[in-house]
Image (cartoon, rainbow, N blue to C red; front, side):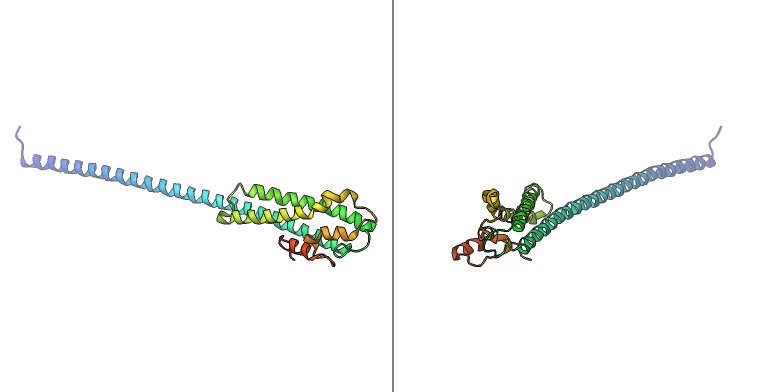
Length: 202
């Protein structure tokens, strides 16, 4: 059997078709692999973005929780301060009335709880970085606040049990000066000492 030019052309076309098919398969596989990689990369990026958004959401909630605690405690101190003034302990003279004694004891117990709340918040916040580089400054200010309230509470801790109807009202007023403002007749030295202590301003 003799091979003709037609046979050569046939097998040449077959070879060309085979090469084309192989090229299509190889290129198609490469395109598919590249597409899968891009899809995976996009999926990973979306997951990273979702994780970051969730982290930021949680951080924001934590920051808001701290802010609310500070505001609530601050408002409680203001309420205590105003009530102490309203029962006449800002510039008291003479002796303590029953209303003043009862109010003083109740308000000092409330102030004690607020001081402990500021102290706990200071300690807990110091273990975090909720406010980034500002965290340390906030912790320091919380320390000033709780230390100041602790100083105010000294008159109650040391002499609270002996303060009763008929006690010296001026003595109690002087002990509360750091919270409710200066009392008439304070010595210059006492005023100077308390002026160095951070006090709440309305």
